[in-house]
Amino acid sequence: VAVPLHEAVRRCASRVAVSLSEKAVKLDFDLDPAAPAVLGDAQRVEQVLDNVLSNAAKFTDRGRVTVRTRRAQDDVMIEVADTGIGIDPEYLGRLFTPFLQEDNRLNRRFEGTGLGLALVKRLLDLMGGRIEVESEKGKGSTFRIFLPAAA
Image 1 (cartoon, rainbow, N blue to C red):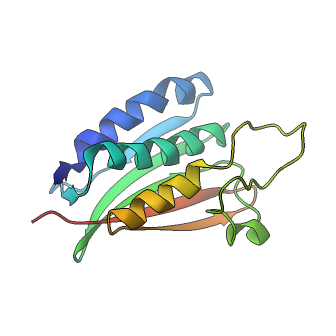
Image 2 (tube, one colour):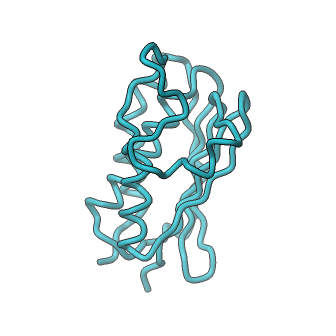
Image 3 (tube, rainbow, N blue to C red):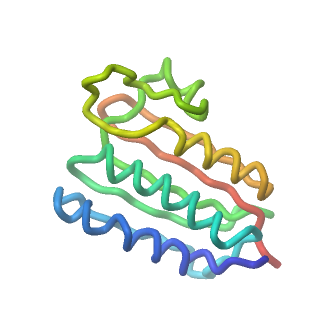
């Protein structure tokens, strides 16, 4: 169905806003003025956004998290960029592998199961979307989610 994207973005962002404000991390929005809708399952679209935004909040201790939306031909792009710890280039190719984390040591700083991004990729595949990532260790990460645009 057609999912009003900006409503979903705002709901998901509100769920991470408290943890970001506690760390004095700024949450910025740069939303497409045309307010595009995407085709998908509304609950799953929010699940994808929740996972990506919560990762940005978890791995960013200072700076900002920025959410952008843009129409990109037949798709809508949702970009979540942060100024967090970034991802090691050697790990990027395995980022969407279930149960795999960059730091698998028992005393690791960040908790998690290693399922969030694997689930995001699977849900996007099922909805005809895709995800891309760029990252630089120590400088932050940018996740770009593409979903089919609603007519």
